[in-house]
Image (cartoon, rainbow, N blue to C red; front, side, top):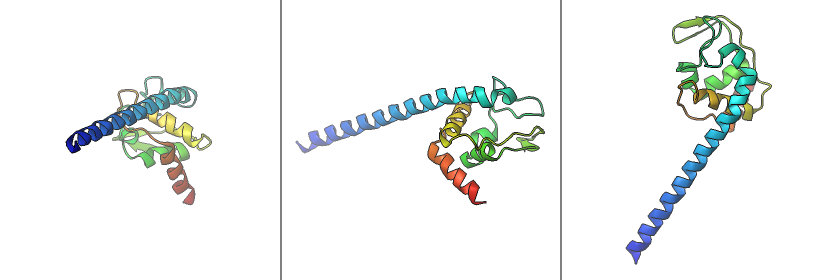
Length: 140
């Protein structure tokens, strides 16, 4: 009886983990879908439909250390904007404005879209990630 209960407990646990995994995958897909619209509205004109950027003016969003790297750094790019930056050995000279007027959820969605589009595969950015980065940013 004890072994049967252990097996049932194990199976129940595995089913719960699968359900959580499906929920997380569903959440990411929803975030990417929302982020795609935000990207079209706020980012596409500079970074292009394919995420390829524009020469040495606007950096690409394809497989770069900024996109695939540290979440707080990427979030702070949207919060603060940037200009005259070197990314992966290439210099970019256009000024990117701050998008700090976007909500934490909007920033999380658009960055999750970017990190999971254009051939990128990276973890989602959460609203909590953005809220934390915004607070740290405001303290400086």
